[in-house]
Image (cartoon, rainbow, N blue to C red):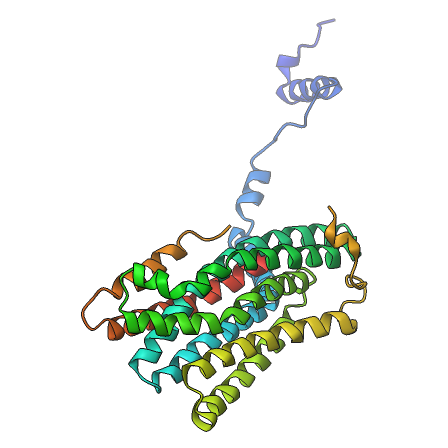
Amino acid sequence: MMKYQPSDDPDLYKFQTNKQASDHPFHLPAFTGGGDMREEENEPLLIQSAENCASLLGRIWVESKKMWQIAGPAIFSRVALFSVTVISQAFAGHLGDLDLAAISIATTVFIPISFGFLLGMASALEMLCGQAYGAKQYHMLGIYMQRSWIVLFLCSILLLPMFVYATPILKFMGQTANVAEKSGLVALWLIPMHFSFAFEFPLQRFLQSQLKTAVTAWVSGVALVVHVFVSWFFVYRLRVGIVGTAITIDLSWWVAVLGLFGYTVCGGCPLSWTGFSTQAFSGLWDLENWYYRILIIVSGNMKNSEVAVDALSICISLYVWESMIPLGFFAATG
């Protein structure tokens, strides 16, 4: 009897070959025929791409909403508080060129140095509060904030000579005598605003780490409205001059501080604020800001220095006003 060879029947040979391969322990199913390929080629790839694109846009929209829920109030609060200084400069402009130059130098040279230094130190609190909130150690948020108050208050005292000796510093920098003396007077009256930073910045970080940015927005808005009314009353009714304008800035910033503090201690943060603690006693500043302050100082050496200082300080104020928007987004990402 003739022995049957697989080669005599191609179909049987193919069956035997595939069977042997399938019996192999490491066998993977082979791609057979062109039908499957044709089916894959006929699949609507554009519909899949459209679905992926729609899904991506949906995720972007959701994340954007979450971002704006934090960034929006943060932007508004920063713009509102900075508007306090801008409005004061506008009212001072009605008093005269010398008064406008004086308050412009005080608010765009000395105050931003204090602002940048204390804000940089308060930024460390943002990380500590975020870690404590994530670890559900809520009581530590209040302790960290109280420690920050102490540290920033001591640093504020160390920066006081800059305000006390503002007049000789400006004269040494080349400012005219009348501009330096009037600016030094304004700087002295802005010391309360300088000390408000030591409490305002930790309170903002404390509430921001708990996603309570809406509170800071409401308080900042109230402080801005109060400032507009008080500035009008002091300048046009009481006619207290440039000193009264400086006092209105102090008052508005302390309204914001007391508003945030009142919300914190009066039940707004029951888990994170448990009262003052003795544990608070146990246990960076933006260099680019120098550039703008130096420009203000140098402009005082130009002819008609009062107008030059006025114009440059207004331009820088507008720039800083606009920069409050990206700073609000930075707070949201933190």
